[in-house]
Image 1 (cartoon, rainbow, N blue to C red):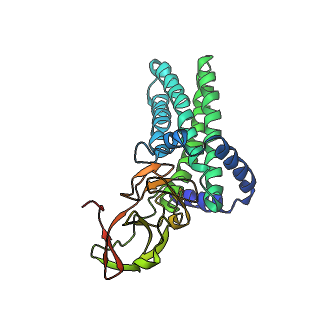
Image 2 (cartoon, rainbow, N blue to C red; image 1 turned 120 degrees about the vertical axis):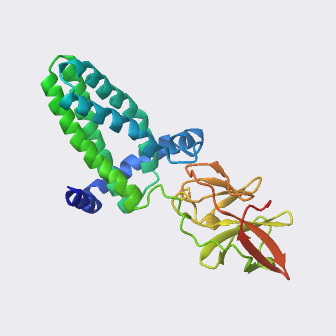
Image 3 (cartoon, rainbow, N blue to C red; image 1 turned 90 degrees about the horizontal axis):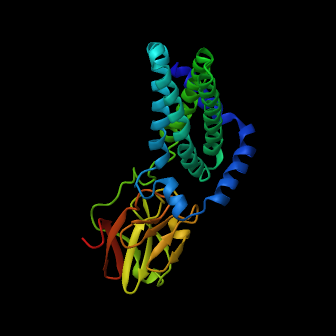
Length: 288
Ligand code: FES
């Protein structure tokens, strides 16, 4: 079984037929859900963790529980099984909304696999809806059969969701594996920093974005924690907030806090000092 599922992931990466509908869908979602409170809510910015993978536990758990009751519960648990199928259907709505919001920030092969993932889950949703209706009308055996079909689609969709996260790194903090300097490290001449102008530099292998503002030098990791966008190409807003050019996440240059999503993880922030005209950085909150 695991080998078959890995083949499914590989096949999904090759299915170019999903590119056009995936691009169309991504654009429609981006048009509706723009950076701001709704995007933050669906992304999980308020939680400090991607929301979609947390929400998936509810429909998957409800549907898996209904399957257990179908298999071993007997006649007296039919009503409970139908209720669980219903709970899965209701909870699938916010889960899908959060997933679509994440999907709109993908591109390339990620988007292709995301489109196949969404297709599996849509099939599961239709089958479970039909299962609930059949149970409601007293056609229990039909409802169970449809539920089994829905369960198989959930396994396929869930595996592709896992592949997106664990195989392709979607949703992973893109700075998680940076080798951040713990010691003071020279990165750039102070004279190269223009007031209020984001500038790129490197501390060892770690790309940084630096901003000189009102006599201070502020430094963050340059790789956006969301999907890896280059922050030094972004715009600096008031109060030293830098906006990622890719999907509009905004971070406080002061300490890396997320001001606006879809990012959920803060940017690593660096302490800075100027020695003989050279800016040095080391990892740590600037106020430390
Ligand atoms: S890469 Fe998505 S907001 Fe920066």
